[in-house]
Length: 211
Image (cartoon, rainbow, N blue to C red):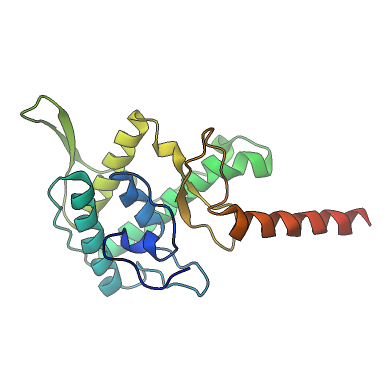
């Protein structure tokens, strides 16, 4: 895994050499990938206000370049950073439950406890000159960024692409990846890096239990 992101890539996701999600959905993936992961371990970009602000500005610029829309002006403060970190962690928990919990625990994801963080934000509908309707984020600071992520997820839900954003099943990894498999069956960000070693450990554990 690389240690320095390429300036043309999503800043957090680039740290983990991941295939990037298409269009504005890359922002959702990038927020999830602000976590501390990888080998060597990368820092949590939302751990401090300075690094979080730098990430938010870079991600907003990248979103603007990707979508062709104006970059939102994101200014974070200490309270906003806490809200953004909570939102990220809740979003990760929900995605992990949707993708992995049912298969691992043998029960519906609906039985999982609901996250408690900020999960709502304002937005406006705008009619473009070409007749298309745009869902624009609203608010300031972290609220604006959360609104943008939720609006992006809503648009991806309509396009049936949001379900392809997943977290790696490997508990030592858990980076967010975009599943490009035909039947959307991927559970590892990389079968070679995480899938094979995890399956091998599970196989050895079963052998020890059998013995």
